[in-house]
Image 1 (cartoon, helix red, strand yellow):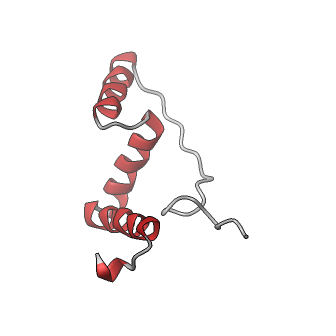
Image 2: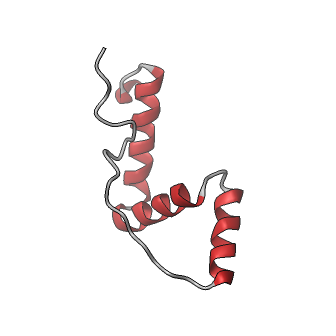
Image 3: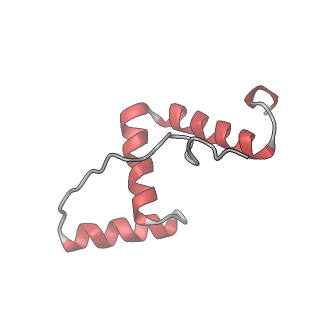
Length: 77
């Protein structure tokens, strides 16, 4: 059985972005990520994706991923 191309609805995540922030900002981002039930990297990735592509597009990606997991086509959802 072949492995899927990617386990992410976003494709292969290879590009890296680094930024320096002050300690208070980092603490607040950690808190926001925790409150959202995510790790910091996942939270920041979602934040960037929403800002770049828009909330509707990111929501469609998530729905498509859930449909694949559930074994249904996105149109049936």
